[in-house]
Amino acid sequence: MHKHDMPSQETARLVDFLPAVICLCLSAIVLIFLNFKPTSQNKLAAVFPPGFSQEMAFLSVIESGAYVTGNGRFDNIIHLQITEPEKRDMIIKQLKNNGAWAVINPVGAIGCFASSRPQQKIKV
View 1 (cartoon, helix red, strand yellow):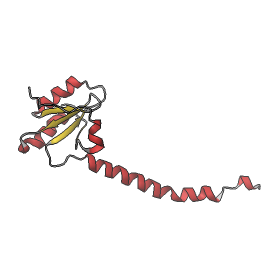
View 2 (view 1 turned 90 degrees about the vertical axis):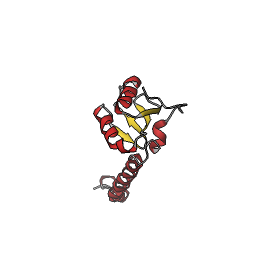
View 3 (view 1 turned 120 degrees about the horizontal axis):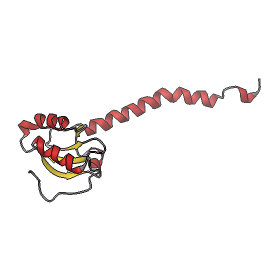
């Protein structure tokens, strides 16, 4: 058997580190999602599916009873504010019923790639 036919010790050592690397990656993912989790504050971001137009997303937020306060870099991410804290859970549920994939903390992921700073709240 030639030397190049045998598995090298370096390859075997990399495989030994694989469980640690997987744990590190899973820990990072958990920390990221904890940052996305909506806090008790009433400023949130609704993430709608790709292809959801900005108009449809705005209407979904407005129909839920929240105020649109801005948008993300993509049309399917809308920043919103809930002015009646006692209705927060109901509004989040309504947003999800209206098609939102997630309602998250807008500060997570750099404000969902915030691209605009609204001048006023919009409620129709």
